[in-house]
Length: 349
Image (tube, rainbow, N blue to C red; front, side):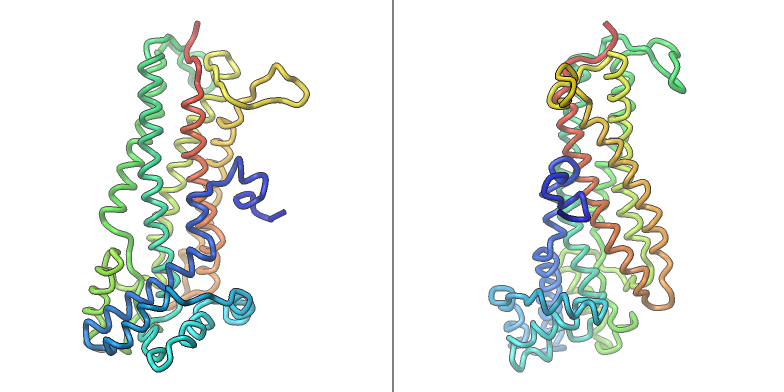
């Protein structure tokens, strides 16, 4: 058993998302941070900061390195971050080249950049899934769009509308969210590279050229360090919350429509006590996921309050919140596609 529903051996079947969850595994995180270190060595060698031989030795590290996870677990309890002991482990296999690993960087550079690399993958997954939701809504409009439906305001009958009218209110936000995801991917998530206090003091006049080259290697946007300016984290979390919120609205509407007989949803939803029932489980869980993310976004806004040049407290809070929001959003896209594709009828008969 686990404390989190997202990797629970049973509950994750409903609330988890294996594909997005994989981006927050220990293996994915370690790989992304090492990718940062390899790219940093390449950029610094290209700018003459370290030797080409050292960069080549560091570039070979991912093929041979096996992390001592027990040591990392003990070390983070002492240091509060994983990088000091991880750098020690990396350097142990590099010999003389080890002194050039992580040169000019700080723990937050490796951790934040590793996160951005993994969030690029998460956004790409969402970019692939949202069109399936849009396509499902288009299919429902083709099948049922002309069917009559009573419009309801404040839970009361208002005026007659069509199924197409309600579908339009579902589809519009999803289209907008996909555009926002694509805009974020096109602009590029930001590189984090500032050194000990954000000044890249060890690199001197090579600081900006190395940073630009590093961003190009990693295919991230070049931006001055944002160690204590966390708007980008809140922005990404906000997009997650908007996506799950819009899908939660669809789920809420479908649950109500199933209740009043204007939606027939196929699939599961079995009851142990009442075999005749088909509960709108996936529609209900879309509401749950939306509300979960709505609560979490306030935590990310709390985590924007970083004192001075770096906060341990606010930064650690992000680690607790953002991965869950990403997985929640992934689960919402998965369930939304499933429930929309399982609809058998919509509208008044």
